[in-house]
Image 1 (cartoon, chains in turn cyan, green):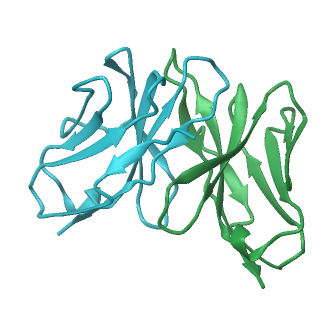
Image 2 (image 1 turned 180 degrees about the horizontal axis):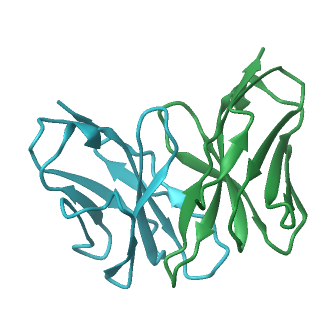
Length: 114
Length: 113
């Protein structure tokens, strides 16, 4: 069964540094998402991407965040200047065109900011 | 708030028993989804129930949806130790085409062998 894959599985970065989290969504999917989960808390929506542009973003997704789909397969989340509070699990998800479809999640990237 | 709330927050049962988790929400929804998360891992989709459905089965899983009460339940029958995980309800908050999911707070299920 097709999967959403994320790399790296764990990223450790100094505060203030830039990080890029990578995702390969399921190939025929059209909607792409990033979510985050701070340890012990619920999963929170960050941003959705459709037709090569951001369709929705949450309050968390401020100017230090950006997303890109540089080619036909990768979907990336960049955090420009990381803060301690950015430490979390970051999940990528994708879904197809039809409504009432589940989202398929990757295994996540654990981001640790030192 | 459009967030979902789940209860109980934690549930501990013996293998072979049934586990029931509940989810409440505040907004109108097109569907409600249940996901499972093993510790430190990603979210695995379990089942999706549409707003015009009242009950759905998948193997040992049974999901109900009551749109008048804005609530859903997930029943796992004949539980196994391998069912130990966190379970989340989620529903799309549709704004245009986005369909991003809002997640509940989750139930941590522990099945004791």
